[in-house]
Image 1: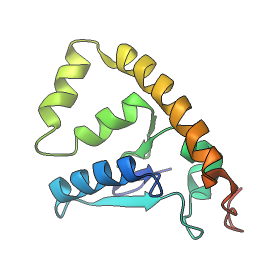
Image 2 (image 1 turned 30 degrees about the vertical axis):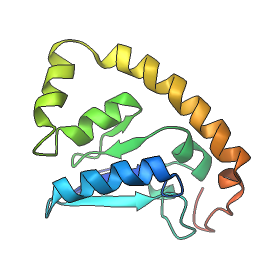
Image 3 (image 1 turned 180 degrees about the vertical axis):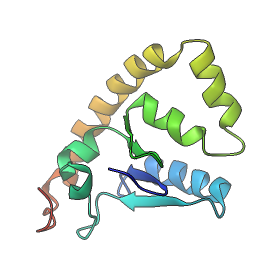
Image 4 (image 1 turned 90 degrees about the horizontal axis):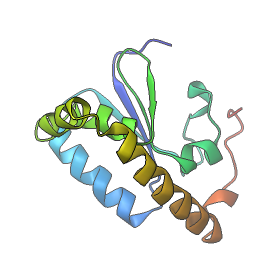
Length: 131
């Protein structure tokens, strides 16, 4: 899959996630980034080979080359696109922090997903075009 822009899949029903994404959106300005709220019924996440549950479980970023980044790597891929965060992405990569960040993120994401499912986010009907 090749595309011309970065695509960020996020949980728009999560207040914490929405605040963080809104912060990133302000920093991104006019950069070609698609911000796709996976909780919206019309969100076309099937084009990435994901269903809503998979998209809600972990953070996903598809870069401009079509490479999908998941979890902590997705944050680093997004940070690399943002002016105030590029240095942080480079630092995490150069210090080899990605595996540690991944362990921390996966633990948080599991807790978050269970909580969101209890709140009903996992029962949102899938779009008919999703896999």
